[in-house]
Image (cartoon, rainbow, N blue to C red; front, top):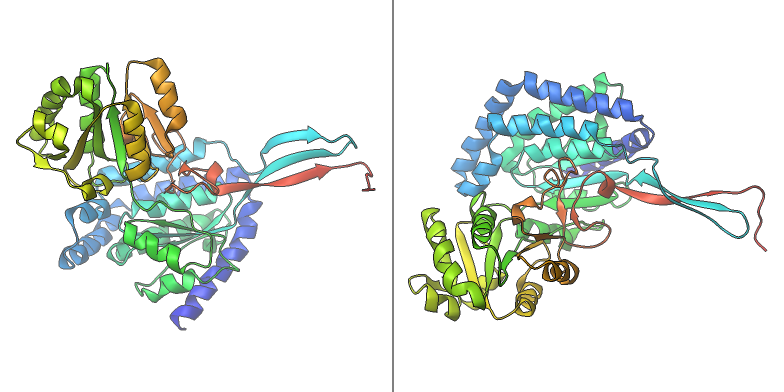
Length: 418
């Protein structure tokens, strides 16, 4: 069978399985997720052995340390996958929920009912944990899912695919409800993006080049974010100690992810006292600072920022720093250089915090909290399937509800239109 024919067959099987999943009971879906979690626990050693093959491949290909970090199945990673599945089991099943009901003058009762999207295709790099996160959320929300991980995670994903397939069959469901593409061939992605009659939504997750390739070649709607140029704005009158903690956490805790801070904006009224204090902490953490002219006047030993730095998603221990004259200037900077991903303000002023929440156009806007909280698990959605910076039909971390849509359910008692 050719690659094209195999992709077509996988897509057809997913479409058939989607009909079964759409009417599957919440208990059976939860039973399946618990089985997957149990099998991950039982097969930890096998999964880590398969993952070692991928790590060897990644090092041979000289992938970055950040990519290898995302690829590694540590005990903590496996435990997090199990915890995520168990948490999704506790969440309310969204399928069939009536979100709104109203009655028309003619007596028709109109409602909006939540339903699955159908067949979702995930295309992603490294991160074998995404295989479990995506499968768990898609199955719980009544969807079928096709998973295409990167070539660097091939063995890990095939091992996880076997676990998912076993759990589905033991629960009496089609193993085609969650399929992992069983080939490294890059042509597979092109053929997946052509299955507009069988796949309802494409979700790419990875680097900007991957996402732009998917967007440029897909015949199917795409939910995506290109990159995470995230900001923390330290406002005048902000609590200095709180601001240091938030900025350090936003940049340092895990610099190679999309919700890490890339630019720090500081109000000019506190820059003289705050910047030396926070710079000392960044220096201890090994962060390279690149500052504007006003920042350099306070921190003369750091590098000078150039225009491109304000657009940059470093995914590394590098931070752009700018002193701004007002909150208006901070918001304007975010609008020009940001990616509508995550922005945070550190402030002691309630009115200014409310204004920031209202005026900043990003998928997650925070007050006095780290940008690292833009995450489905941290926000209580369960393991997220991705973060969208487009607004159709989801904006921000995508959990169960974002993997559904609504249809109109209309109840009458003989009405006819005149």
